[in-house]
Length: 216
Image (cartoon, rainbow, N blue to C red; front, top):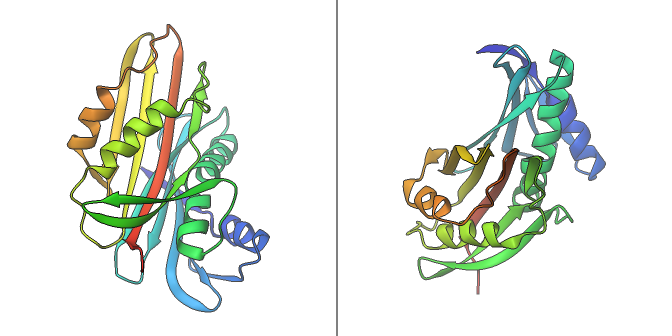
């Protein structure tokens, strides 16, 4: 895919809105007072009317969080703006709460017991497209969350995302990722959920970060 550029200034503006001083250098954004996390937003042309925004975050542990957000529009500029909106809706507010200590109304914070240990978990609001509104339907979210909670996770930071797409009563895509990799265990459980079947198109996406064990 062709690299169109970065969105460093957008991310700096988002952080400034939440009173976080930030620096950006050669496409890398950091807090003014700390070298980590390091954020990069890169936009690639993925089709005639589509782009892919690659949102990356390097943690102090060396781990790299990667989320890819699609953008669609009649023009390249419209597609980029759509991808940026998806980034804000799906990922940014989770980063803001979990990694930058700024709780906000667009990300929920939980304590889940995973692999016998209490973990702090930050979950973003579901992002939706199409002809079916599932934003108030907690059942599909609970099915996904339960599948993640049942994983034998190590005590380091983890992240997970779900993207489900259906059109004309058929599943077009179901992507369940853990630490940037496909997670078949979660995918199987998500696909076994009784998703609404409609003649039109709909999709849902959600992202979470799972952090180190809760201090007692």
